[in-house]
Length: 163
Image (cartoon, rainbow, N blue to C red; front, side):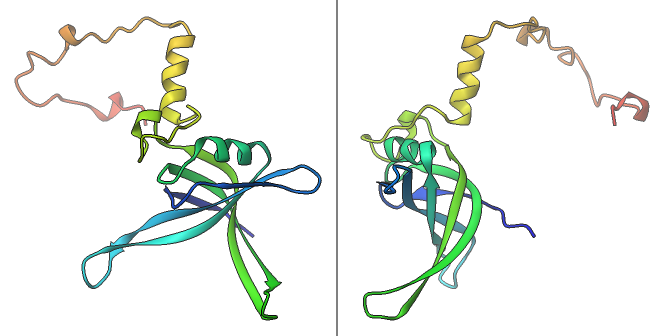
């Protein structure tokens, strides 16, 4: 059986961080995910998906995600139920996140008070460029374009392709 979910959307409000009696961090947030189609009036609709994240990622989500933050969530769907205050059975559906990615840089947040961990993929890429010395020289130079004097299509033979 496969139970895998990948979502990209914006938080509808700040994550709610709580701790279990044994001290395990848990955060809840709702992710608004746009549908790929429009309704009869031509408007885009969104689904509002309850997400749950545990331990250190829960603390990170609470510290760095804010209302409007763009986030990627990978996890699984979990259903459950409980008895409501009125005695009726209430059914729940949550995405339990294994991974939460912050998809915007600090200055790209929806509101000026928001911040991220700097753990966005782009930031990680930039950081690794500055922290690691280049092991290979960059041979591609703008002023040495091998096709600059080309006067038509470039012929490529099947034997030249790597696949």
